[in-house]
Amino acid sequence: MIELIKSKMKLKTDLAIEKEYKDCVNDLINHEMVRKMHNFVQHGDISCLDHSFNVSYISYRVCKKLGFDYSSAARGGLLHDFFLYDWHVDKPYKGLHGFIHPNIALQNANEHFFLNNIERDIIKKHMWPMTIRPPRYKESFVVLMVDKYCASMEIVKIKSKSNVNQYQEMSTTLKDEKI
Ligand SMILES: [Fe+2]
Ligand SMILES: [Fe+2]
Image (cartoon, rainbow, N blue to C red; front, side):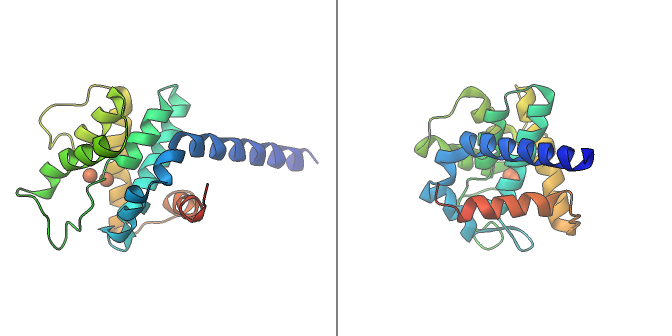
């Protein structure tokens, strides 16, 4: 009986967290340009949108746990790779993708959304230490670490039920929803 109550309470908490996360990124999820990220491959068979959802949601959970600005982490995480081209095939800009795409993503994000300083820093510095200037905010450090973690998981396809798959399920639900 206690287990049943506990599991119901956990479910309630999970649903509350899910709603809070959706509230943070609602306008971004429904934007046609953000959804275009689904057309571009990021790692293996993972689209840029799936990867960005993974980074956004895990960063949100980590920042919430640590008492950081989880909303900016969720939003910056979702837009951190908002560059809108297939970097494996062709890229419309000169230079190495690893170095240039944070600026392209920031440029695109600024064009379509109003970003706060933390969100801007998250996008611009997420490839640090490849970008020379280090991140300015603790949320940026969280997102850049989560990005590296997700990229590694996606590349080697280590998908245990408690990590990437879980977030991909959620991202699929969010993407398919018309909020
Ligand atoms: Fe990136
Ligand atoms: Fe990334």
